[in-house]
Length: 224
Image 1: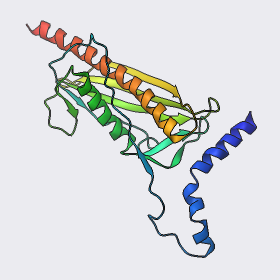
Image 2 (image 1 turned 90 degrees about the vertical axis):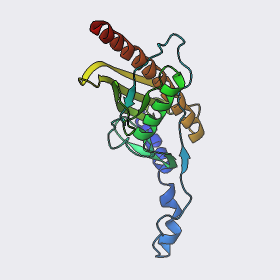
Image 3 (image 1 turned 180 degrees about the vertical axis):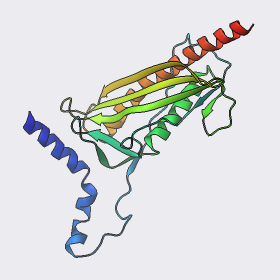
Image 4 (image 1 turned 120 degrees about the vertical axis):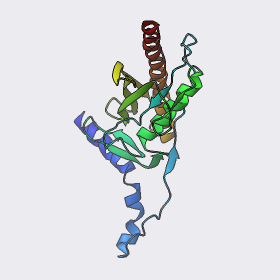
């Protein structure tokens, strides 16, 4: 088992060493490589969620989304992989179109809009008299190679819904999904990322709308 783990780590490191191998002929001729040379990375973007439960409430309050907090290893455009439970690496020649937290924020905003249950939703940078603030932590956003021969995609977000007028947290919940990639190829890995993230986005959007509406109606009834 330990030998398989070492072989897997070596194979994954080979993926992240393509750029270094490409400049070996230049180094052999004692010439320094020119920064920026070589093929650019392939850029990938995930898709927002567009299907939701039909019984979701239609709300009239407004929602603001912060950029998710993420640790330094995840707060990057590079696509994260774990060859084992303690070592973090990145795929070579592949990147997200934006830093992972910013991309997730945009996808969540689009997912809320796609629900057609809320009109007043936007990023924190957009002027909005929001009734609620959604604060999120991007806890997991990576491909994991220690479960078996194929990578497993792991996406996890912790969410806190805050009533803005008194900064009260009215709800907190974690959402996670794991999805097996069909093969150890980037196209399949990105597809599994999209599926896992979609599951998390769906549950997070639905929980936010239900939790916020319950609080909103309780406040209206108590003030009438």
